Length: 135
Ligand SMILES: [Zn+2]
Image (tube, rainbow, N blue to C red):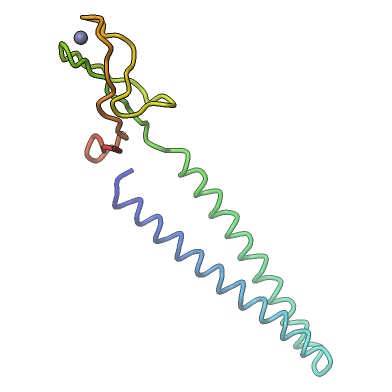
């Protein structure tokens, strides 16, 4: 996913959230109004109750659907890659990021000269530019 599409998704979801909250606020107002109207106009109060419950149910449903969608999007996180370099002979190897990796950490010995290698870069793979350095 590129930058443009991800920002559009955020815009849409925040717009959806706004609509949900407005609907929820309106339905709550309808419910409150219904309790006030009950003593004067029974039928109007029932309509308000109906609108209130429908609005609340609809906004809750949309909210749950949106959360599901966002969760599905959240699974697709780009992989983090670590570059290990040998200072002596310049041998480079790239592997998946492992817990506890940090820049300038000494890792396993070099395959060529047996000198301890150093972690030089840790970056996130991004489809758009190929890589994005984290540190
Ligand atoms: Zn080496």
